Image (cartoon, rainbow, N blue to C red; front, side):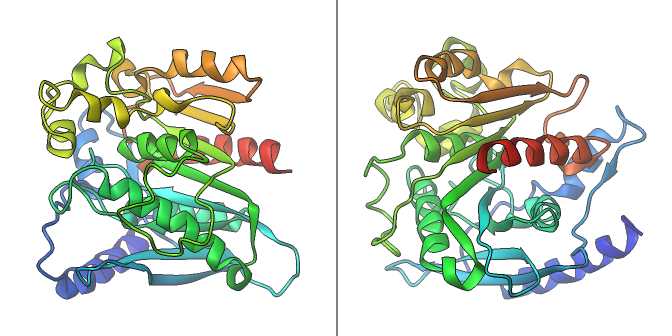
Length: 320
């Protein structure tokens, strides 16, 4: 049941979505299904984890959180526990990966749904990718999404003092960039929606994402097609690569960090030095490595559940 019926619903919903797509350039090659196909030969027991709305959880899908000057609308899904209790809930912005140039917000819907079941308000967000707009557009969009969460806090019972970012791969890098730039106006200019609200976040869950483009450990990213499409060539745009590196901003305003990593070092470039900076300011961090796991492990069983459990435990420790 966990696989077939949710998968069927997922395909039908995606068919509707794709039928509604406009002429915006998109690369949708990075999906739960493509991740499964990529890994099933090496891991024959691996299974994709599809959306499956739990009992007791409500969903509001494809809400518009920003309208750009071009007329382009950006969307998000919200998942939240049922009930009319007055208790405020921690919010989590869910940022999908895909090398800054591909992927869909749907990739993190299964995780968002399960975290909502655990008592959080989760927001799976669409943002502009490099085929549509290069850096820093997507970062500005995500800052706007955090502001939207605060602007709609009453509607969804979000505690505005407890908002986290959860990101996988490139989404983890972006979540880290949001957290590291708390209090800065660097990314407020190219998406000004709900500008009266703060875009600061109080925790970051980095699921196998890099912390720097210019750190020695980030050598595989230098000249890589995905990062180059997003940032331009490093030879001509070194300052942009530096500016887009979360480590450059780590300091007293950086919130607690959770790192959940595969055993592939290239996907946590700069992590250890980033943690050293956090330690200097007494900022809490955790590191968990899922040995033998592939990149994008959080989309697949048997690694989905451990990632969920680690994330829940971290959030409970930080917010409760």
